[in-house]
Length: 484
Ligand SMILES: O=C(O)CCC(=O)C(=O)O
Ligand SMILES: [Fe+2]
Image (cartoon, rainbow, N blue to C red):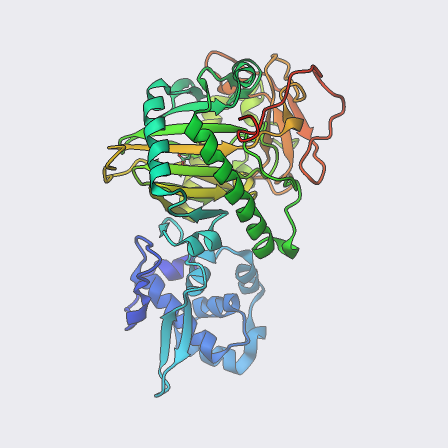
């Protein structure tokens, strides 16, 4: 099928195929022409699956006439085993889903006509970026929902002004990438409610394998906005459960409790070049299937999301789920670089979605986001300066650290560090399983050990420990609103 869609064919006359609403860049004429041919076949054989029609179209080298006479004479039983396999493999997602944004109607004089259908999500295509703006498209195509103009304008401005002032205290965090220590390409700071929490955040909680040095106490605006974020995020969670999740039930491991943010990471992107690379947020204290409320202020930037591509040989874990990066004997750094490059190439081939985040928009990253998708703020070729923030964008991610995953409970690895919680993403047999591993090999100046332990959770995502660890009396983090 790839050969089919990449081969140039004469363009059919299809004025409706330009898709003005979905904003996708780089949609090719060839793909449009495939869509139209497929649409014709669907209207002629409405009871045959789209995948089968597409495969027959491919096997007929794109000839609608040949495909239609084959289907008329022999029906779908003509599919060869190889064709059937292709039809069910999902490898043709790029073309098939692009059809979903169209419906076919027949005009009075019997001519087939293709129209955009508003309710169906637009398609992601291989190697392309699909730009989404409308909340309903974002909710349908990604694990996120967006609320534009979230706060009253003055409140958004007051928070922005306060955080721009705060941003002079932000810093770049350091992490280990292959053999180099690199700095984050933007500045950041963590905010918590109380001095005790400040103490814990700088000496007990770790992030990316290190203690946070840059922690501050939540400001007045940050706290009062947190209450509104809490309310809206809880409403969005319920909506998502009812409208999207199977059986209208929360996901396994998702918390059934009210979402109550007790930490906020605030990021500042100063100018178009500042960014954050593709990543999933660390699960260590958030636990499985966390929800995150992310408020954007100042300059509009693009938030890119892409699915984690399942590919066994690309996995960073061996068959026991151990991280290749953490195995002592492996030539890990060069191997991991190859894995990283292969992974990025595959992900790029799969396509990504760009969600535009204007000033005063709240993005809810839902429970299915961190385990199955990666996200990034990509460098921008150009930006439109904001009247208050200039070239800067401020982002606040409100997070809910679970009491049951306080660092007094979480495992320590053999090199004395707090182990981190990760979800196996790439290998079919371990995909979706959680594990505790050493993260020190990502920490500047640390080698790391091979610590590995499967992580067990109950259905609500709270840990089931073999034994309790470090059970001291230190209080857990307070909800922002409750601690005022
Ligand atoms: O700036 C953003 O919108 C995203 C920030 C982010 O991904 C993070 O803090 O983990
Ligand atoms: Fe993130």
